[in-house]
Image 1 (cartoon, rainbow, N blue to C red):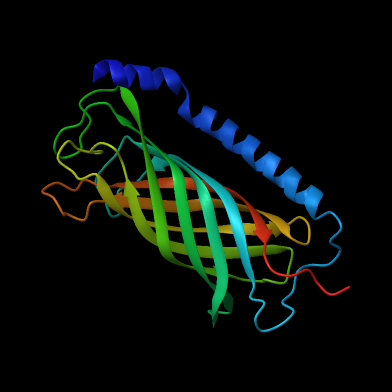
Image 2: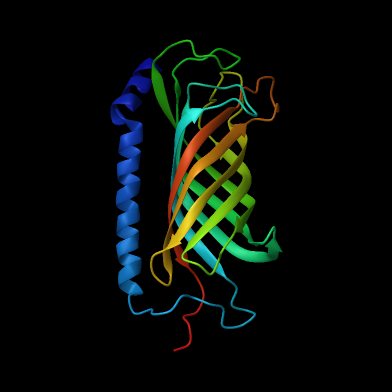
Amino acid sequence: MQKNATRLLCLFPQPRIALAARLAALCLLAGFALRTVHAQDAEPWVPNSKHDVQSEITIESEASYGNWQVFATGYGSKLYTSGVEYDRHSWGRLLWARADYVAEALPVVLLDEPAKLDSYGNPLTKQKQIVPGIGFSPIGIRLMWANERRFKPYYTLKGGMLFFPRKVLSPDTSYGNLSMEMGVGLQARLTPRIGVRLGLFNDFHFSDAFVVGRNPGLDVMNSNLGLTYQLGHRPAQ
C-alpha cells in the first residue's frame, strides 16, 4: 500500500499545477474549435420558437484552495474535478433571475488526502495520496441575473454522488458519498454562442450521510472555471 501511494505521488508530484495545466489546455483547444466552427455567427442566440428552449453546455474544472468545517469535520484534504454541466431554462423566473435546471457529470475527480487517517478522519501522517474517483449530480438549480447582458452573475446549487475505489476520509467510511455543491460567480459572453464562467466562491461538500458508522465528511472551498456553449438554432438572418 505504501509503494502504491508513493507511486501515485510520483505520478502527481504537484497535483494542483498538473491538473490546472491539463484543464487549461483542454479549455483552450475546445474554445479554438468552437470559435472556428461558429465564427460566422453575428448575433447573440435567441429562441426562435416556444420549442427552442434556452440551454447551454459547459466544460468545467474546479480546484479547492482550503477547508472549512460547515457540514463536515474532515480537514487536510483537497478536491479537484473536471466534467460537463448542462443547463436548461425550465422553471421561469425566481428572485428576478432566470431559473435553470442543472445536471452535471464529473468523470475526473481527484482527492488529495492524508495517506493515513484514524477512524474519525484525523490525519496520522503528513504524507499525502491521490485517490481518483467519479461523480454526478442529476438535480440542481441555477439562478442567472441579467441574462441578456454580456456579464451575468449566477448562483448554483447541485446535489449528487461521488464514488471512489477505496474508502476515503476514514478507513471506516463507505465507497459512495452524497455530494452537495453551491456557489456564486460570473459568466461572460465572448461570442454569440461561446462564453466563459468564473466562480471564485464555492463550497463542495461530500459525506456518506452515516450509512455506515463513521462520517467525517469534507467541505472544501473551491474556484470554478468553465467554457460555455449556447445550444439551439442560429438566429434568423
